[in-house]
Image 1 (cartoon, rainbow, N blue to C red):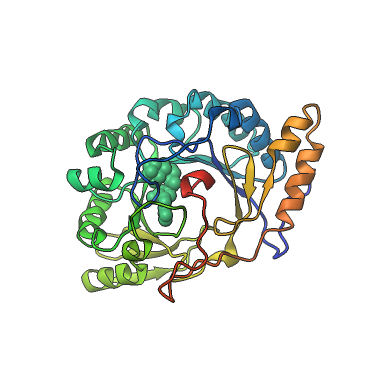
Image 2: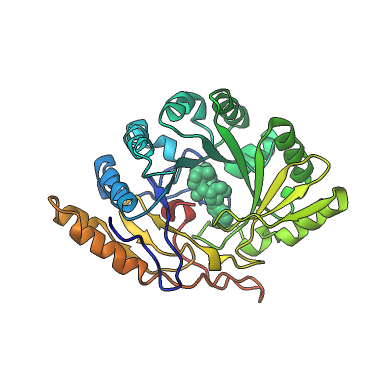
Length: 335
Ligand code: SAM
Ligand code: SF4
């Protein structure tokens, strides 16, 4: 058996997030500028190359695969990739095949995703107000997303809502989204906005709303219990005793979560980022394309990259500056 991937801080790498495209049918204010320049299509890994890469990681011990982007469901023929990956679920090499999506194409693909063995999906949604939704996503339409979520639920897929906490925006949303998630049996996780990519005129410092404030609002309105449960990921959880629901907090800024990091990220061009908040990466496309009859050079490059996984990121807004900012967009690295 091949030895699993362990980094210099004794963290086993069992989770791969793969961005299958940098393109998207939305232009969320905190994620992209309105006029984005996307990669030329020829730069992208083909679906066959993505299959070979993911399968290599699975052979090296990755047990959870999250497909993301950009918007993963706008990549042409992406269902054939999900179907191909489902063989690793069947062989039990993979425990979970999942995705993060804006939900716009879920109505079309819910059935195929369920057939490929997808059991849980993260849907990003920051507001239940149609106008605010159109404003924040620039190009998105709320009813289409809600229809997609319902379709996924009808196919037995469990939905988790991810909402980015934004100052002067999320305050009003919090009670409504919380109630809606409780009524619809969906988990909810709040995310602090991270300084990733140039997003035009919007100011990060103006967008940033600490999840300490979000927690305070819950404490003022509910009985809050801290849960010790960790999923090996960055989220910390509370339970609202009145509704019984679990709320997650992803707090890269107000609380560093790196000590339990079990993940790496692969871009749609084959760059492997060992940390979301650092610039160091390994080019996997070169060994992938240069050696088509053996995966050994690819495996060696992956192992060498994992040996360089840093202890953590350096995001910091505390001095009212964008410390630790990285130039690439979240949609490039795969959020
Ligand atoms: N398009 C899909 C979606 O929106 O779910 C997947 C890709 S998107 C980049 C993944 C996640 O990153 C979304 O939940 C989005 O809200 C989040 N995101 C994007 N830019 C961010 C930023 N600057 N800070 C924090 N989260 C961000
Ligand atoms: Fe697209 Fe997701 Fe970024 Fe919004 S957050 S622009 S949906 S990639």
